[in-house]
Length: 275
Image (cartoon, rainbow, N blue to C red):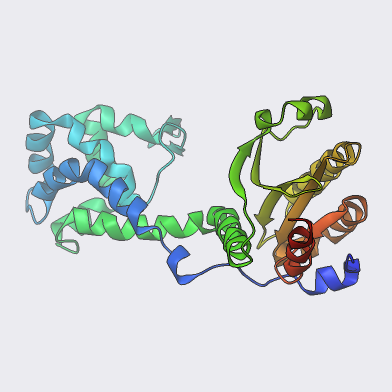
């Protein structure tokens, strides 16, 4: 029996974060490793009393070393970020590393020069490791969906329900008649009665995207309802939905199978009864 929307909205989870998901150290290490050689070369500048001369020496030896200057400022928007130069012109941040004078201006104007000269940093590789950890916190919201999929797959496994992950719609040729926008589903579960194609997501914060998702999944479910061999299942959670409550309620009334982590057991019992 489907829960009331009030029960559904009141049981939304505060978070789906785990300790493991707070920082992706594997990605951090990979990012640092890719530029570690250039960072080691820039270490040459640390503590130099005549920093301009040291920059010139390093630039003449290997100008490519300075291509990683942006990460020292925790900037990763390569080729896109613009700043105003000393002439009041809008220029790409990347343009500063194309000349010796540009590199010197960059290092001095950003404050990096003082950090290097005063030895506030003793190893730029270690420093950038910390920068990457900090930048990775911005990616946590993107891991929310992955965390949700992991939690749901674990619930399936614990309930001893066979399932497939990341199922392409082409696996089921008769889905072509649905003209669905989804090309891949997070999960698929096949029972004696039908095939359940499942999408999962989690939203900590609101935004226009949630309205679009709710509308899109409503449309997909309506197409699925025309074929008794399939059912579309939406497992979503997160208190970001509190700011898109109206659109979620509309989708909830249109989609027969909508669950969150609190009431997911209802779906698990349904599936087990059909195995």
